[in-house]
Image 1 (cartoon, helix red, strand yellow):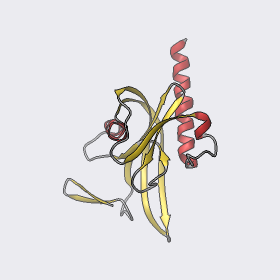
Image 2 (cartoon, rainbow, N blue to C red):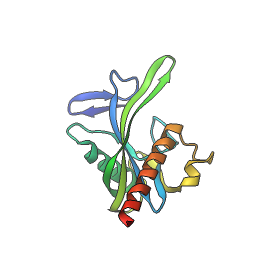
Image 3 (cartoon, rainbow, N blue to C red):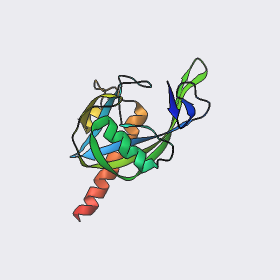
Length: 161
């Protein structure tokens, strides 16, 4: 896939440089929001909402936009959970290379509805992302979800004190 970006061409497949992306671990009522990807990479797989950062956009602006576009929800980024590399190789070549800033987020508004490049969205209980369920989550995604979920619980416990 090739997309225009202010006169430059960004090549997602077989890129000449890593692409910067954002992701959201949205925790609400002990559940996490997942989207089913409607486009490559990972088409048909469940993952965290997110996508490429646009030129001139801050990381937090990007995560807000991506979540709104994919899920209809308005969120507030709370803190960075993890900065990760996602490198997909094919026949000794790098097919996709993303550097992803995953943020812990909370919902502040909107209405849940799959849109943009997500073909489904749903809230998922911890037992679902930690099991060999039909979700078939990538181990890196599970690790990021767990980190965000634990951090959300810590912040909630502090608030209750």
